[in-house]
Amino acid sequence: MITNKINDLIENEYTYLENLYIYLHKNPELSFQEKNTSEKLANELESLNITVEKFIGGYGIVGILKNGEGPTIMIRTDMDALPQQEKTNLPYASNVKMINSDGKESYVMHACGHDIHMSIFIGTARILNKIKDYWKGTILFVGQPAEEKISGAAEMLKAGLFTRFPKPNYILALHTHPTLFAGTVGYCEGYSWAADVMLDLIVKGVSGHGASPHTSIDPIVISAHIIIAIQSIISREINPTEKAVITIGSIHGGLTHNIIPSEVKLSITIRAYSQETINHILESIKNKANNIAKAFGLQENLLPEIIQKESTPAVYNDPELTNKLVQSFIKILGKDNIIKLEPEMISEDFGLYGLQEPKIPICIFRLGTLSKKMLEKYNNDINLVPKLHSDKYTPEYEISIKTGVKAMVQSIVDLLNKK
Image 1 (cartoon, rainbow, N blue to C red):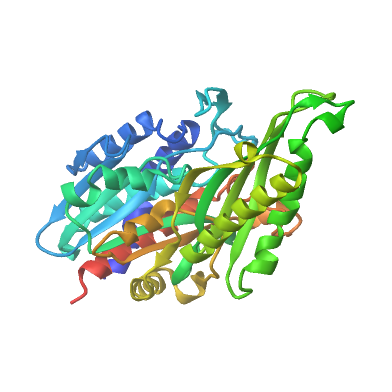
Image 2 (cartoon, one colour):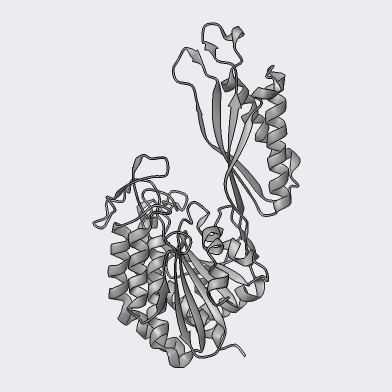
């Protein structure tokens, strides 16, 4: 029985995958700088006689494993890490430093589970390569750069991911979940991850002496009014049945105590599921910022400027594909370990793969990484457990890696054998 064979193989492969995970965790790289990481993954795939092409949309890689005639399935792993210092005190903690996108040196850490994703990615390749008698078709192993910048998927598509390589019938991915127990898998059909638009709002003013505010127009005060006004958009302009979030994540303005500055920069993220909601919020931010600035006496040439940064659409998990995967999860992990989840407001550029015409069914599922020991450490309070992007995020990697490989391999085999 294939399920038993997968279980046996993952036990045999685990020590190899653990060593790979430790290496990846200790050697993280920032978005669009994943040179060594992509080379490592490419070498791992090539060691299995999988054909690999490199430098697809940056350091993206594509491995092709063909085994007779049949459907094509793409599995994607992200590869990049985050610009933060690890504070887990683990023996394999990262001490890596790199120059980040603003030219400053920063510590780097895998605080979002991408090291686990990559380990499962390679584990899946190793096992599929050993059970070719159980499936027919083509597997695309896609290592994607810059997920944290929500722009790597777009770069790979621009580089010809769906034109240079076999176009997949299905696209799969997984992502760690910090508050689901290791050994469990979570799923959400339909909209599951929100669209994300990041922007900078530059609020201008007229600089002057702090002792003579009447001779200037203070952009800090204007910004304060704009911030309060923006926070009313969700509660008073968006249908309560729609989900949306606006967060102002940083405010920068001024140099010292007694100078009224000439500008203030607000960094904003917008999350929602529908593009109509996103568009409404963007227009409302613009209108509120402009009208408040005018109320303070600013002329047209000094009205606030909106600079749109990275953005990505919502992730829509194809319901039919998701339900097929759930049946595979139950088969190999047991029904009690499969958890239906509610949609989240975090974002993932994986959704972009499902919007290309003609549309391809996609699904990204969640992988529990929490240990009972970790929960106890935080007094059994799930709200205190380090989450994704925390400098103390510590996944229970053994059970998580084994579970992820089992779920992914079983799903792929079942999809390729559907008549």
